Image (cartoon, rainbow, N blue to C red; front, side):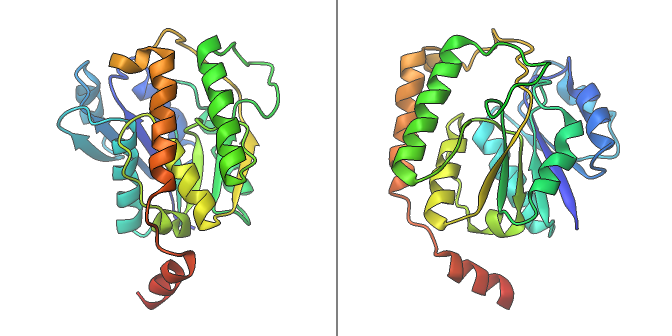
Length: 243
C-alpha cells in the first residue's frame, strides 16, 4: 500500500524542520505544499532533499493547499493520502493509528473531542464553540456522527479522493468535504487525537478573525456544498475500474 503524507505549510519556519523529521519516521513519502510562505520557510525547504514539493507563488488558502495535495496523490497513484498540519498540533506518531483505522473506511479523521488525553491543552473558547455549533449542524443536516468538524489530521483512500470535488480554497474546505462525503455515502470514522493548541493566539486573517463572521462564512460553505452537483459513487467506481 502506497501512502503519501501531505503537509500544507504557510509561514512555519519555526516548526517545519522538526515536523518533517518526525513525519519521516512514520511515512517516508512526504509532500509539502508551500502556500506562499514569506518568513524563510521556503529557504528551509530548499535544504530538504527527500520530499516532494508544490509551491504556490502566493498564499492561496488552506483549502487550495489540500486541493493541490489531492490532485498530486491521484496523479501519482497513491493508495492512501494522509494530511496533517505543520504547526505542531498533529503528532506524526499518530499516523499509524489513522492507517490502522482506515481498514474498512474511506476517510478517517482525527477528533480532538472524542476523548481526553493527558497532554491536552485548552482550546480557545470561541473556536471550541464554533466547532461545536458547526459540527452539530452538519450532523443534523447530513446524518453524520462527527465530534470534530475541523481537524485536519486525516487519512483518505484513493476511492474517496476520486469522488470528491473540492473547490473551497479557504478555511471552510473541511465543511465542503464533509457535505460531499455524506452525500456520496463515503464510509467515515473518527479516531481520538490529542488537542494541542501550541499558539492559541494565531489568527485566521481579515474578516475571519471575527467569530461571528467566521461562523457565517462556515454556514455559507455548507449551504453551497449542499447544492453541489456530484457524480454518483457507482459511476466513479466504474470509471476507475475501466481506467
